[in-house]
Amino acid sequence: MRALLSDRNTRLYLTGQVLSLFGDSAMWLAIAIWIKVLTGSSAAPRRMSARYPQRNCLLICGHSAFQRLPLLRTFLAVQLFKNQEAS
Image 1 (cartoon, rainbow, N blue to C red):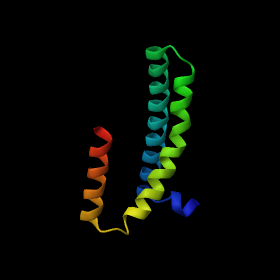
Image 2: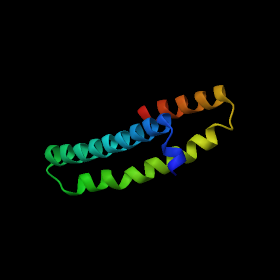
Image 3: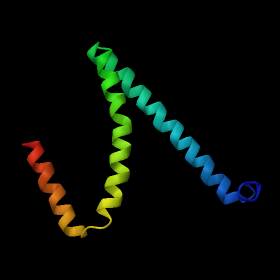
Image 4: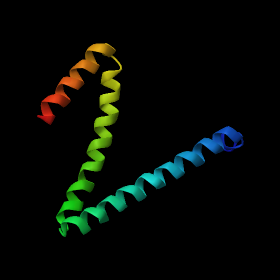
């Protein structure tokens, strides 16, 4: 571990990751407070915070799956799906 942390670039990278995670957590807290203020409901922020881990799992699994698919076909399928949702 000391050998890893003795490298300046590794320390900078890990510091950046820690700050990024802190910022992400602070943003989710701010969004939950904002939802509470807007709706007046205590259940709405809980529903939002329950979806945060689900979103992360879907992003990781989706990224792995989409890397194996042809790019153009995948892009077109996602765009068609988004257009169906919007209407």
